[in-house]
Image 1 (tube, rainbow, N blue to C red):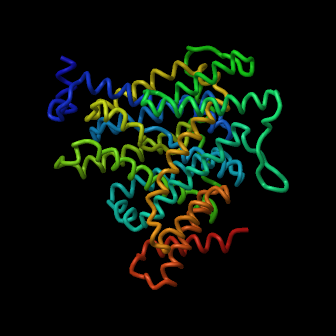
Image 2: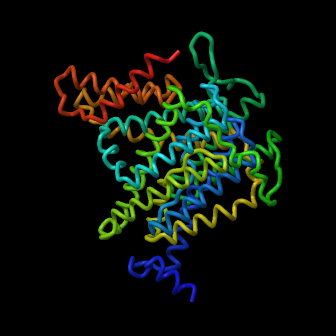
Image 3: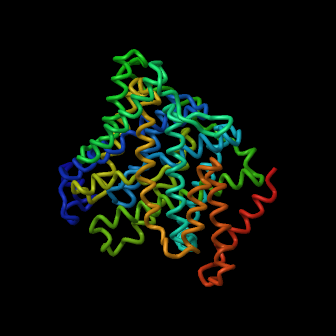
Length: 439
């Protein structure tokens, strides 16, 4: 009877699938993206958020996103906190700019509400189409390099240096620090090898393997396996908006908004293209519902205590297995809820085990830079400026702003005014004032 209900609700048979296939696809997707349960709390804790509360918030926000996408859009796409924007949240807004994590959560919440409004008004599509594809690619790749910088710092591979800004970490001793670096590299190699052989859950396997090796060597300790979920009281509904309504605060909100807008939309469309649901007569409505689901999950995540959510490219693993309906996403959501009872496992995972996962994800993001139109200097030069300045300024907002400004000025000075549009010029002027008026 349950099987018949699921078939009718998700139209499984109409999509040439079965309940068994959808469940298998959901489990496969979860295994490939489950690393976020271990990595995101570590990144959030670097912002000052309680590790246990961040673990619960991560699982709940992901479950909300998956359930909404599965029910409202009937897409086999999983949603969870973004690996790009959690780094921006912690290492840029909190550590570099000095904002509290409560204020950063406020910015996430407002950006989510803005996207909800845009999705309802259909303004979202116009804004997306106004940004050049070359800049979209550069932003994604630049964030990848930004994450790589964070990962290498977490693993002790690089360290600050007075003369050269950055230097190689301590590799020539048998200290605990050098052992952690070796484990970091080993973890990275394990992930690469398993991914090459298309082993499901390659990232999570790498993280757990290195954590176990660290325990065996006495570098880190096991804190348990199963327990009741930690308290989320310290992060629940603690948003702070007071410091956001001025120039720099508005830029932070806009950066969250802009990156979420393009990241979630581009990822979702790319995943849908891998299925046959692109021919669905209700494609536009379902896509809108999926984007709305992600935006609602972002606002819910901010209320719970985690950064912006996004559709996950790892959903492609489940789609390849045969997932075609929202039941796949629902299964992923239930898996995240089950993981709430494995919080001690998260506390046993050290940064030198999660760092390789960040570095691997950054490598995947860096691949996009190959799609820039290198033959057109008016496209490639602004892209490179964006790509370089995001990690060099250690600020996604600064890198994006400099990319926009360089794009508009280069187009104007080379006589390619037709490549510009009103929205792009407005955004460039806004970033111009941001740089001129900053202290």
